[in-house]
Each structure stands twice: as C-alpha cells, then as structure tokens.
Length: 579
Image (cartoon, rainbow, N blue to C red; front, top):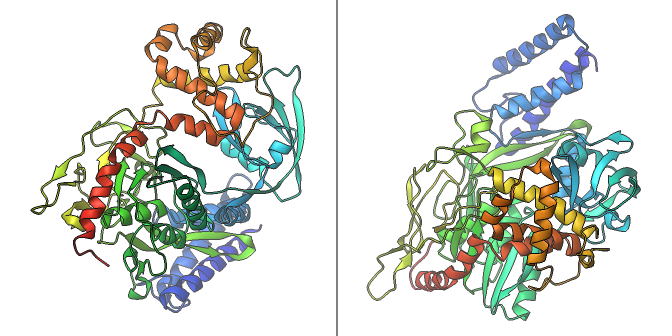
C-alpha cells in the first residue's frame, strides 16, 4: 500500500466512523468527529495525520508495512478512548461474528501451553478433530509444515482456524506413538454452546455452568437446561457465571428475565445523549421462582455482570465468590470497509437500582486495568483466576424489620468506588467497581510454584497413564473418549497405587522440579489433579470440569447458601420493590 493510499484509507476510516456514530447520536458526520470538535479542528487533525504519514514515508530507514501501521493508528486512537473499544482486521472481525453465533470455523479443540509446546486440552464431541482421531494430550509440533513448538497459544489458534472446507495438516506428538502422527483435517463449522455443563448435584439441586459468553443462543440454551433439570426434580439452582467474559446485551436481558419478575428492570443504559439512554425490563418472560445462588469471580464481565447485578439488586438470589471484573461499557459492533470492523463504546451499564458496573480506567494504563491490585494483600493478581480458594466465611446478617428474620448482608467493599446504593430489602452496595458478592470466597492459588509444578507433572503423568505406558496400571489406558458418559464417583479413582506410580514418575521427570516432600504435603490436590486429567482423557473437558467442582469451595459455599437465598427472596417478596 502506498503512502498516499495509506493516508486515504485512514481518512476514509475517520469519515466512515463519523457517519456511523453520527447516525446513532444524531450529529451530522461531516460537521464533527465527536461532540465539541468543529469542522476546522477536524480538518487540522486530518492534515496533521497525513503530514505525519508523508514524513514517515519519506524518511523512515526501513521498508514500511503501511497496512500494519494503519491498523496500529486506528487501534491507538481507540485505546485513547477506553480499554474496550477495538479495531478488527477482516479475519478477526469474521471470528467475532462467528463467536456471536455460538459456533466457529476450525477443527474443534481447545489448546493449552506447557513447558515444551502447545497441547490439545479438550475436544468438542462430533468436531472435525474428533473425526480425525485427535486426542487430549497430543502436542502440536507443526501446522501446515511450519514448526509450532515455540509458538504461543494465539499463534497456534490463528493458524488452525480458517475458511470452512479448507484443510489444515498437523504434525502431532502422542504419548505411546513410535513416530510423529500426521493428520489432515478439513475445517468446519463447530457448535460452541455457551452452557458447558448442566446437571443435578444433590437431591433437588441443579447446577448450570454458563461459562462461554453470551451469544445468540444463550437464553434458549438456559431455558432448555432449566426445563431438563426441572424434569429431574430440581427445586433450587446454582448458576455459575465464573470466567464468563460477557457478550450480547439482548441475551443478558433474556437470561436475567428468566429469574427477575415481569416488569422489573434488568439493566439501564446511559450515554452522553438522552437518545442513547434506555431502561430494559422483563416484559415478556414468566420467571422461575425457586431459590437461586449465582457464582461470580474476577473473570465474570459485561453481560454476566448485568445478570448478577439484576439478581442481586432485586434480592432474587445471593451472589457468591469474588468481585467481578467491572466491565460496564456498552459496545456496538460496526462493520468497516474491506471486511474490517470495530467495537466502540457508546454508553454505560447500570444495575436496576443505579449502580455503575464499570471499573475506573482513568489512569490510562492498560496493564493496571487488566492486572488489578489486590487491596488486601498489596500484590498484583490476574483478573481471570480459575479454581477457588478453600475458605468458608460465615454469612453476615443485618437487622431486619420486626417479625422478619435477618437478611444476608453484602460483604463491605474495601474501597467503595461509587456512591452507596440501597437495593431491595435495604441492602447497600457500591457502584463503579463491578459486582460485589454477598459472600466472598477467594479463588484457589494455582499459580504458586509448587502447585504449578503439581499441575505440570500431573498432566504429563496422566498422558503416559492414558497411553498405557505406566507399568502395572495398563488397565487405565484410554483408547477413545466417550463424550456421552455420565461421570460417577467411582470413575478413575486415584488409589495409593496410582499415587506411588506418580511419585516414581516424578523421580524421573526432573525438569518439573517437583519434590516428593511437596507431593506429600499437598496430597489431596495431587489426587484431584491426576483424576481431573484422566477424566478429561476418557470423557472430555466438561467431565473434567465436573471433577473440579466436587472439591470447589466456592461451589460448596453456594450450596450451603441456598436456604439463605430462599429466605432473602421471600422477604423481598413481602416488601415493595423497584420496577
């Protein structure tokens, strides 16, 4: 692309964006870039940009990738606005649209990085990868003849995805195979349901894991899952929104409407212009009325925060876990020329009683925004944390009206970011920092050096065990995964004999650095990790996730809180509530 075309492309982007935004807020596109910028200022910005491009073109020492520079210029402009406005090249924009349709084009695997390469983490039942004979634990050494052993997860994912019907050839390293395996797989459309698990945990108690975002099928998936569990005798529910990154607004409203009353507000949207502001209510769904607990953590964002906030504000259920991410910016998706697109913030989300969901990003540092500071420890922690930490705090209470039992009270936020908001039953929460749980239960520390070594060693050991390569335990070999199997407590129990074989394996597998004393000091976690890996080999990733939930302190605390959730909902039902 020439420098002249580069400047014209950038100018075209500016005009198109103005037209799109102008169409929303009612401001003539050629008149301003945004509110408060007049025509002369717009012209000076465009002139300065084109002169900068000309200077680079005339004087830069090396060859210039103008397309790459143009993308960086657009993304830099968006980052100057907020952390969530993003530009997408054609391939990325196509992937975004596919993900919103609860499917994507690829081979149907999830992948993870271990110390010596990228491995297949799980497979989707019926996907091209399953039909081609790929297995959990296969290491991807090459993609279409290119060495992938040093690639990141993103690099492998980008290379494996592609157009429907086009083949991709993988070179695989498989435990027990005498030579590398080569598999050519035709990419296809892969269903990706947003509900990863739905089953009965205890008598009368259902569990639904809504973990893969909010896409076009989410509300209908949830409706079908609840009906199926009700037929199995479900009388109370745990809805798991942990690590759910969010998604479509209309789906979050439809999901929340399955729990909050008809006519009640789900979320309000407020923009810089009154025409961007709107209140969304449940106006067409008869909600279920059984006791409800919602699980959230630092990876719960956007649409999942809308659902949790609506349920909490109305006192419809209790929220358990950790304070959510705090992503409350309304993103609209705009198509751009040449197949590109962008997501642009047009307003902000507020809970039914007026709490701002969005966390502060005014310091301008993306690192500080995405890697938050833990105010209680002074250490930096990732915003997305996986399993939960063992902790069972008692349920705090606050005085209630005469004749009414005490209601669960929210955990105080250490540094309230916004004004105090009084919600249903007089409970007080603070806005501007995500959704604060009613009961806080910290996440499990899985990144400590010892537990990281346990995880790595358990993965490598289970890979050998499932390949039938551990002497005396050949019967634990896994030939083909059975995705239809319902996990039982007796499946792949980690016996003393298995633990001893693991110790022997660790003695030989020196690179992990795990010691026998570390194994003995954390034996329950060792057994949990080995069983998890074996179950994934045998029955798939969703079954493996179920293994972890059996020892999940956040989930166990949620089960204990169901009677309190019932009491709260009954108390709120006797008092006037916000519609």
